[in-house]
Image (cartoon, rainbow, N blue to C red; front, side, top):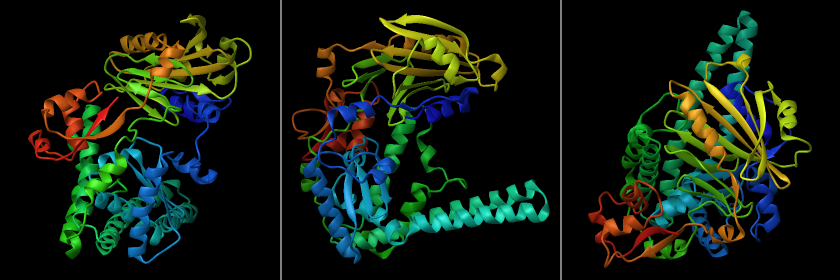
Length: 471
């Protein structure tokens, strides 16, 4: 992660302006040290979507499904790959269609995978990205011309706002068009037509679960919004249900699909570190820390973010280059506006410095603290922000959480392994027993049901095989 991006978040939340060297998440140097394996994407594309997963058999399976859809679509020259990410998503970039490990874990069969691939292929075939870029440029040109002609910036802004709302509506229409194209592709390829609707339902339920984990209303993803660039799931499923091919017969190949994903990691890669409850643990960099109760951890290529329901935030990342000299000097020289009350301290044997957001940079966003810690030749940073009536207690709790930063022992680091998806028979165990085996601190049954596209626990007992996540 670059320091300008790390501090841009802080600036947005707490009025700090970035002026420092590059920063990376606690993963990049580890990836360089351990190697990424043999499956490597073109560098320009990898910068956009992230690295490819290194399971060659899984890559080959997804490519076979993709090529089957391509043949049905009557096009050629496209490639398909799995991204090394636990977040359920799919991308279309240039001639590539990508699905993540997270999406593969969520889907129930090969037909749904074909539907996801077909949707992204539809975007590529219709050149939707290029069309949106042209429309967006037209909106900007019109806004500039309106401002110049009228002599009013307000008029230019109004034109831009109207144009951007139209662009969002245009983007939603493109999504629905990609759904229609995908449905035609998968039916022609011999897959079940209802896989398109079931794919959307998988994504809707995952979104509702993620909202529940964060304490949001589960139906937040179903709400229609004029500002959204994507249609709500109910809009997509209604549009698909009206199409003649929606109920077309065909194969689903759940057995082959389950065989392909059995044993697949559903975790971050070891080079990114692992979230274990309220703790972040990095096996390669051998570091870890624990956030306060009530905080949720999110691990991303930009760093590690912890969020509380009151919107208190902790952001963690590591610098790409060593910090020469005292850490308090680095804080004075590199963070602008310069933090106040800078103090040096020791955190579990590591040199550290802490400072506060200067009062003169008050943006009405409460309190902020900045902490930099030296671990050997590496330096890592915490940005802590809290607001509201409880901000004093929360900021102190986050400072104490930063003080849990420590170096893992070699045996601790070696014992850290990713969680994996397993295909098992439900015979001999109850749904409650399977839920209890899920390695998560909460919502275990809800996670199990979403993972298996089940509405209620009793549905699991009627299956010949189910998915479960195990350490």
